[in-house]
Image (cartoon, rainbow, N blue to C red; front, side, top):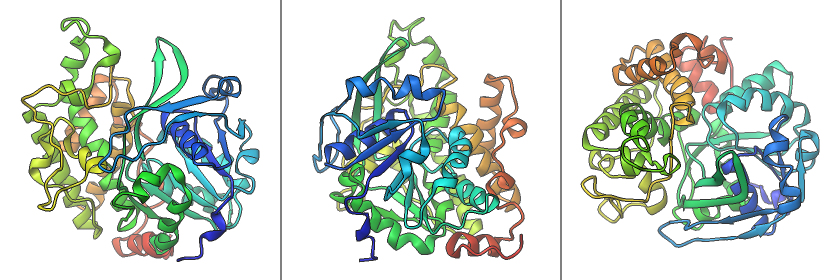
Length: 413
């Protein structure tokens, strides 16, 4: 044990009002925890305030190898747009917002941090680096553990009809293993132990368990979203945009996984992944390993997250590309979806920046940035604020970067 027992019985603060935040909050409440959920204005009135009357229902098939399931309707202990109230005396703080909201959220959060708190970011998207940088700039010296994950504990969606959002979240699957890391990674033992006190990770704890990655850059390279979402969304855009126009489908039911993937796109995903491998090797960190054949499935490499591998290291379940499947989550249904507007200007952009700094060519990744930008009539190379300076690591040599990622020591800034 790493001395994290003090987290037992403490309130859990969930920061965010989207599907992942609401699902994490509902799952923790169903497990018997005191749960507070927060969202920033002006989103709060739309995302959370109605739940004071209705509560929220959490269900769904929750597919996973070990059959872990928890469903029901809950009412949260606190629903608020006051971040001080949300995090006061909380043991664990879950950040579950889109990455574009990280900076504003962190600036609100930092003044109210308390010694001993553990922050989990789902999905990290370099939020750990940004939070630590902002803590330095805001002169915050609270002794907190900050860590992020390569994915979320669920594949989950809100129930919507048109512009109306129901008080209902449904999980398509639950992860049975997730890769995460603290910043600095010397805190990994404590960060991993804190998972035991975060019930939305119970399927992971009762499955294959959490995996400590080799620094938060490992977590950035191990994030399944860019490698799966970006090539499938960009190269499958004609199917998406014609789904209701020509194919007679409901646009809200289009699934990049079920309807967009094909062998040629899967090959691009694999080459994208190999550029991530080259970046990780050049920097000197590890990343999640996948076999070539694992990419050629209607769930791509995501299946391993919730169905695992067999004794031979092969996927327990494969959804063949030559057969229809409805296993995949819905989306994207237009080019303004986060699969493009978040995964390209944030994740792909940082991969590009690291490639430039460490002399690694990233032509597949760069082509995705160019094509996504063309669709949005912009250049993400110029307009995205996500670069190494924004994350606070631009002036570091490779040796200094690794010292910072692993020990939290800044030597040459």
